Amino acid sequence: MIAVPGLGIPLLCGELLPVSTVAWLQAHGASFVYLPKLSDHSYRLKVDAVLQRKPEAVAMGSSRANQWRSAMFHPTRFYNAANAVFVVRDFARMLEEFGDFSPRVIIFSIDYFPFVPTFETTYSSQSRGEIGGWATPEQIGIILGVFEDLVRTRRFPWPSYDGTPALGLSAIRTGSGFRLDGSYNYGSRTFDDGTDSVSAIEAGKQWPLVPAQRLDSSILRDFERFTELARQKGIALVGVTMPYIPKVRDAIERSSHYGAWRQFRSAETQEWIRNQGVLYFDFSRLESFGGRPDEFADPYHPSEPAYIRMLLSMLTEQRFRALFPEIDAHDLEERLKHATRLEAYRDKWPAN
Picture 1 (tube, rainbow, N blue to C red):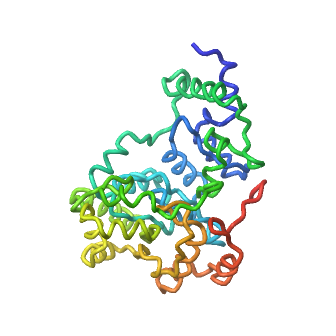
Picture 2: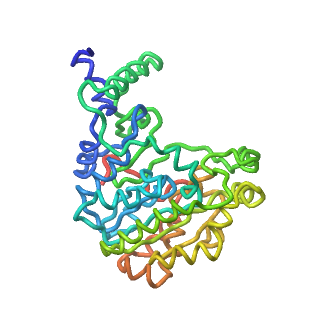
Picture 3: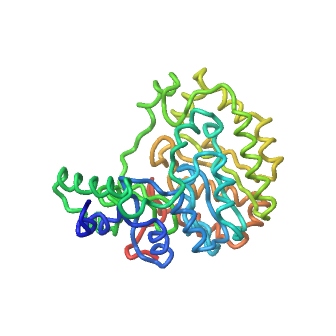
């Protein structure tokens, strides 16, 4: 049995903190980014955060929706619960876990690959619960992992990265992780234009772009259950297909492995999405929203300035503007003038 004093370092660095505690700390303004290395309970973190904050608008979906910042939607109370739902049926599951609470609006990412069974299978073991408790195999594994990291790196895991308060070994070592509003801080990144991924994409061997010729009908039904539940709860749904960096998109278009992608982008599928009451924006092409090819955190994730450009385009749609009448488009435009390739909202510590 591991002695109680041995819990000190894993607790201090954040690896053993229950995500309900992390959500509470963030909801009460504690300044840090959070990303553990030895476990992943981001689904539970995001659910708990929504229930504690009860925001008006929520982002949901994969990591491709995780750059929506709360400041973009000011003064609307917004929380980014994305980077937690990768399996389509978990959209409805998360809504059900909200219980009696319903946000007014959900903005969610929608891509072709969650509708492919091989992608869904990868996330079959994803945790939807809290971190394991006292003396569970998960807890013991985390404790051992923290001390192995200490021995390997010879660096004590102080809860900070380059002046940024950080909890979790990944956040401490890289500065990456979830911000207070649930959005994702990528830390320092060198530009990747996707060149190294092209050959793998064309061969159908590049994650997350799983090869498939058709969208799975049973997973399509899972999506319909989500939209039906949202209607029952009176939630407005906004779906967004994010862009890929141009070389990645071009490789998908050239390859014969992605019939599912072509089906997803067809007029028939887009009509199916909209017929379920979803206000849908297809931004898979940069020119659809005035996007720039350098505004990407990596080939699959547009950066903050790209999200602002998408939001400005969305605000020209009358139905979307009616959902967010108080968003200041001029302020968003001013932010873009001073944005870097990755960042439009400079995080300050302590953060608000």
